Length: 266
Image (cartoon, rainbow, N blue to C red; front, side):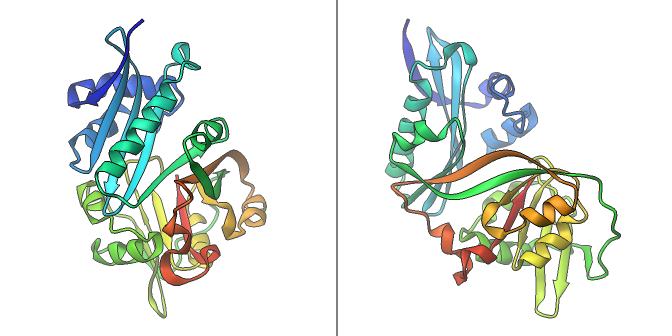
């Protein structure tokens, strides 16, 4: 058995999509994988056994921050160190590119692997399955006229300049909620599941979530567990944000308590 790793290109997109689907990462259908392959800030790495692609991993560089994602190995080839090798090589590629921070989102099953590579848990999330909403559109909420204010709020809340990633997405309309201080929160129907919500306050996040249904990943530190239960939501998978050697400036994004940084994605 010959095991190798190599960069992946667009012709691998169909194969990558199949691997991610089999590995239960169905958030990456082929059209989304193709979008990732076309983006200049994204690089893919594959694990091959006897020249057959059996595992994948993705690296996205945003300024001085790198995100690892879509690390998956076909079930028949797990337990042979391929996930460890992919993660280690992607981390090396990230550091060689000059980033100062390397982050990833881990499932409970994946945490031990990432801990063995010097990643530490810096935040936790719970997936909540929200039922159909029973409220009307908030009077202060309307269609977003442009993406400019969204980009400013996104950078303030998340702590990263993700302009190039946002501009590469289709220009579909989302919702924006305004209060006395201006834009309070926005929901953008990105290609990922139900979209992305970024907010200045927890109350603004709740206002937009009241218009949503389906599975949403919400930061545990926001204290929304009781609200989700009252809304009739069911708790699902728990995940963690992990940072290489614990370096994670996103914990303090926005210059205020991390508990007030509202972030959810579905």
